[in-house]
Length: 243
Image: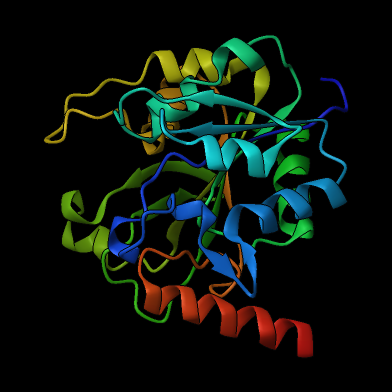
């Protein structure tokens, strides 16, 4: 594995629940678009390739992330499909590839680096987990020792699985050599007919690849779907700056 690192930022979401015409990732946190916070952290980490997945009408995002590359997700067919849209740009990249949701601007450089190091240790899929005060409807990370067995969505979880408080943050890192092979094996046999990135764990396990998860801070993995959550992110970031 080479020492180069890539990142895919998922930035095709609309700001509907924000009651805004702006794409969600362009909503400001402390005066800077959410996606710009992520780009700045990746630049600080000296990531070699950054690709942002945008919507067909995502020109404003394209301008924000320039000079980094973008690819267009024509139809919103799920998170797995979104990541796969970057295949034409990254299919030959054989280092660690991080997949970052564009509405999670507070993940620290050290956390990204931890995920990359786990891939370098030999894990093909690495998930960032956290233990929220209220696990509510988050997907659960089912561990067997150090191995991540699967991610179970809350609605599909048994009572026993719902009792697990180790939850999926959404952030993942992959071995670039197998990322797109894994994605191409993900099916869409679910109620929404979508390709879920979370299914990558089960697919990779069936391929005989190793998956793991590590724990991050709840405030660091916070995302924003609403204006209230956006205000909460601002508060978290201000507290961090003043710490």
